[in-house]
Structure formats: structure tokens, C-alpha cells
Image 1 (spheres, rainbow over the protein chains, first blue to last red):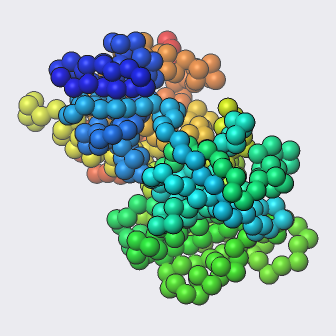
Image 2 (cartoon, rainbow over the protein chains, first blue to last red):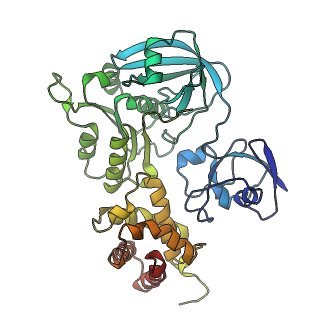
Image 3 (spheres, chains in turn yellow, green):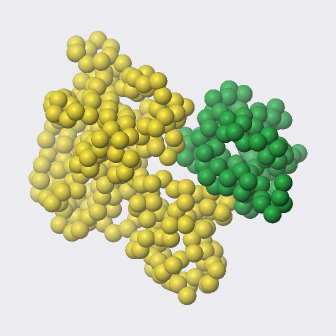
Length: 325
Length: 124
């Protein structure tokens, strides 16, 4: 008989029982619906071993990679330690080693951690201040030997956390980090696929990491980045991106400004409008969308209607105050 | 036709559902008569529901009872969901299967299964 560990509890999974059946029998609250692996309401994550492949059918590839599975069709092949998607795993400490303004509105924050930490560029973590104030930010770099994490933090009007990062956070100070979360990241395979990445403001952070990841893994298809902002204060890394586009044959960069009355040589329109009108069809493309929630949700739908498969659209909408604890 | 093979198998099982779901969902979202019922900011969840619907219509494994169907669609009935909308969805189901070159006889069988949920879906 297999055991299932969730939180502090350990339960025995009876022969022929699914993980969902075991947990419900033990009165553990697990959301569920169709109970046949379709509606994905009972999505859970295995924290130790890989779940049976048959319990991951239909899940987004990035979620499969992170050992997510559907409890209603999971017959454990070994003992499992599991968690619901909103249950937090272990946290780590990291210290500030760099803080630099990228524009008057956006600061680059680099943290160094000591304990082992797994992540994909483009995922997000919850950063927690010593008094408990917590916000989610996307990781802008790929895993390296240096054990660092890079974030681009936009100062929000009345933003408690972002203002504190701007005005008070000092080099050497420690923050608590949740484990990396989210399914908006690059996966190897299908290297020839064209990629379209659209971001607004600090939505460039995850995209910057995803591009670095794709290039490090020898993505050979064209990679098109559209970075947009209303004004120049939201547009950054313009020189780096232009240099990268000059260096790398299959990388293309289009900075876009949507506001009026701005003196600049950037494309004058919204990034997602330019991106979507750049190609007849998105059939076969992989699409990454990060930043303003309205832009992300609208573009997701339009990209799908233009032929991108639902499984090939990766999105991260930056809701203000995603996490308040 | 042999009775030993289920409709689901004849249609091509899960692979056929996967091939159909994007096509079907695109048709539904593009249809101004009905897309307000499907407008959900979480498109992935919505697509998963379309997949569950197609699996059922294909005669595949499903555990939905008439009561489940009623409960799940009750809020849409409140929004005005009626026969004309159900007909539109039936249209898209047929068009999707035609686009995938499914033989007319099998399309008829799938349509009959979907049709059998009409009363529950519309809360009649």
C-alpha cells in the first residue's frame, strides 16, 4: 500500500484508489469536478517523486515538468508527498547584492541565495520582508553557478512593497523567498518553433529570462520580442536588446510606445497590436505574454484565434497586489 | 459497422478530442451569438471544459450526471441561455467534425449524444 503525505498528515492509499479518493475519504478538502482527468479542478503537485505519466495527461508541458498531476486519475506507483497548488513549500533566505535604477520607475534588484533553489527563468517568487509584507515578482535570469536571482521592480503609486524597495532596502539586507512558481517559462524541444514574446513595462523581466533560456538551449527558430510601454519610463534594456538583436541572427526586437506626445524613434503603437499584426497566422507558434492583465488576457485570446494552440500560449498577468499575507 | 468498437474508439479516442478542441473552441469564441457565455478570463479552464464536453459527445468516458449538467449551466440559464444558443453549439460541433473529415454517420452519433443533454443544460 502506498502512503500519501500532505502537509503534516500521512494517509494510506487503498489498492485501486486514486489520490483524490484517498484524500476525500480522509476528509481533506480537495477541489474536484469531473473525476476523469479532464476539468483539471483537482490539480496537485508531487513534491518528491515524479507522478505517474498517466496522471499528467492534458496538462501544460511546463506543469508536467514541475510534477503537477491530476489527483482524480492518479494511482500512485510509489509513496508520494503532495501539495495543492496554493500550498507553499519551503522558503529560502536571500541577500541584496545589487540595486540599480533601470528607468526612473523601474529598479533592478539582484539577490544572492545560499541554500539550493530550483527555478526556471520566467517563473515568479513571493518576496517577503521581515515584517511579513509580501509581493510576487518574476525572475529575469536563468539558473547559473552564482546563485543569484534578478528582478525588475516597478514602483507603483502607493505601492507599499515597491516603494520600500526603492527608498529603503539596502545592500546586504535579507529577504525571504517562496519557492519558484508559475508555468510561464521556456522548455527545450521543438527548437525550430517561432516564438513571439509580448511584454509591457516590467513584464520584460520574465521575457528577458525566457529569451536567455531559449538561446542558452540553442533555440533555432525566430524569436520575436515586442516590449511596450505608455511612456519612456516603462521601456528599459533598449540598448542591450538592440545589441542582442545585432549579435544573434534569430532574435528580433521591437520596442513600442503607446503614449502620445513623446519624442522618440520607437514604434508608436501598443506592443500587442504590432505583434499580432506582424504575421498572418500564429499556427505553430509559441507565445509568451507578460505584464498588464488586460493586455495579457486580450492578447491570449487573439493569439488563440489567430491559430496558436492553447497549449502553446504561456501567460503571466501582473495583477497588482497578487499576494497579501 | 461492428458493435464491438465504441464510438469513442471509432472517432479516434483522446487524440481526436485533442485535435478537435482548439478548432471547436475557436468557433465558439468567434460566434457573437454565444461567445458571451464562454468569455472567461481563464481560457485554459474554459478549454478544459470544452474538452470534457467533446469527450462526452464522442462517447468517451465521463461521469457527468444530468444533475451535474443542470448545476454547471444554471448560471448561464440565468444569463439567458436558451435553445438558440444550444443549437449554435451543435452547429459548431458538426462543423468541427466535418473539418476533421469525420464520416457523416459518426458525426450523427456524436450529435445525438450532445443533443441528449439539451434539457439538462437548459434547465428544463
